[in-house]
Image (tube, rainbow, N blue to C red; front, side, top):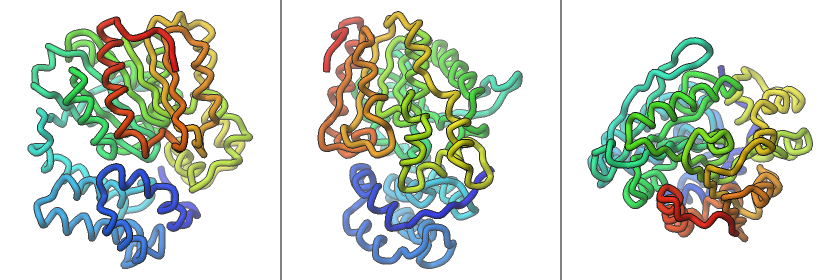
Length: 359
């Protein structure tokens, strides 16, 4: 289920310009599309998905499949609410696979059978490895957010695969991308299945890196002791699921989350909050012994997630917290400079040498 919702295309540009540029979009393309797009949903000239898809097709025809995949990712933004977005996602998959020989990594697209509600689902994942010998390295599970999915985060995913000594298994969290199930409380079963698969894929060590809502699942992986290390970038954990925060969501984020939750029409704030309460992970902190090392990062100026959802980890043992000044949600504009620090931390955490506290 999915639905369109009122959101000004100019607001999407305002919020996401920094993110798009940080992923490698040429400034000239951004400005050209900013001038030509006049509708968020129209599948016609001037429409968001239409115009971005035309640009992506141009790069594909030139053989630049990596840039084409990234731009198709923008074309499908923010949700798969119509045929043009769904076509853009399929085109993104196709271009990403075509681009894979140029990643400088071993790449595999694999369909996993995972547990869900007393049955199984099939979930496509992308496996990236510096050497292809999965059994020799820890596995890093990677989950993106409600509107930034596994292929959209390729620069971050590939940086860890190349430099952190891990095999990365990137997946779309429930309610997003190629996931066949909505964002609901049963999604934790899918993550547990991924952790179990990762244990057998690699050398037995498993870490979880989650961005935005994907960080919520990573936090659970760490607080339950299911994995050996966690990096949480901008996760909603507690305060983000309170009514006051739902009322201040901007740039269509409430409806983006509503789509992920499986609503087929705009929901009331009360229904939205009710759907999200299953993801309040604060109760797990009362029983957590801190044995899983955790790195927590977010921007000081996040408009979607309360700062308290980041700073509440400052009292947790075996945890480093970094609040990045002059940065917004997930500190996305600062990720290129933060990534080496996160890679070093993960290496140390998996070897048992990471500092147990710090900011």
